Image (cartoon, rainbow, N blue to C red; front, side, top):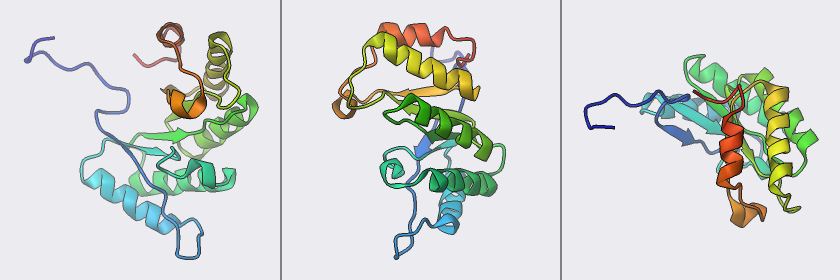
Length: 169
């Protein structure tokens, strides 16, 4: 690519911000704070937002709170701002449930970590990601953090997954 050639289209824009999840002083989810923060991040140049990643307190929020957060942020930023929701868990069934909830709440894509702790082989990782993609109908962003999950998503596995019909262009 030359410096003057156009950049390839990115499915969610070029700058996605991993948004923190605000809480009240009492420890409750602060949806008004989330709305304000999301609108400010978009106003300051974020093309899209990643919600409920590890920066967004995914391990400490309930499934209901995750869905409410997505809906509140969608309400604040409108339909034109891509939202990617963290839905990865150690269990494929639970990940699919979160994926369906995220889609219903307004997510445009899913951040999915490899199932952690059990260290699945590559064919099981591939099956996990494909099941989430098939069930949700949303594009996946694979979250490869082997230091936390105990397993690396191999490049060959990523290449095979990129061939899925629902993959980004």
